[in-house]
Picture 1 (tube, rainbow, N blue to C red):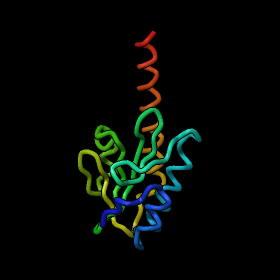
Picture 2: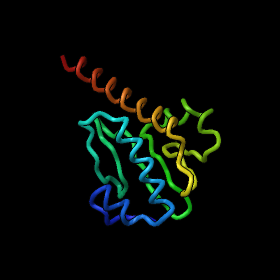
Picture 3: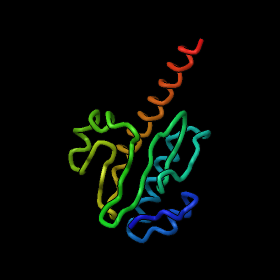
Length: 129
């Protein structure tokens, strides 16, 4: 299942069948509660994404699983021990449609991405002076 026609995150979620819809709602709620208020929610590459000084994280539902996209392959390596129970690839963490990632793990990943993007922006600002 790939939902490519959604224009908003709420539209994407509405078109997602259960049990993945409930899983995405939980993940999106955790992401939203751990990003600054100025974070932009968008659909990019047909999936829900969050942007703040660049892409932060995204999530999506597929036929056999759901995925969290941390937008940084190094993050998957950094949290390898905690991600061991899940299928991972260079840019994705896959988990069952009916079993979201633990809230504490999502929080750590999101907060790390916010910090990484903030640090990257600060480096850019220093270079441009």
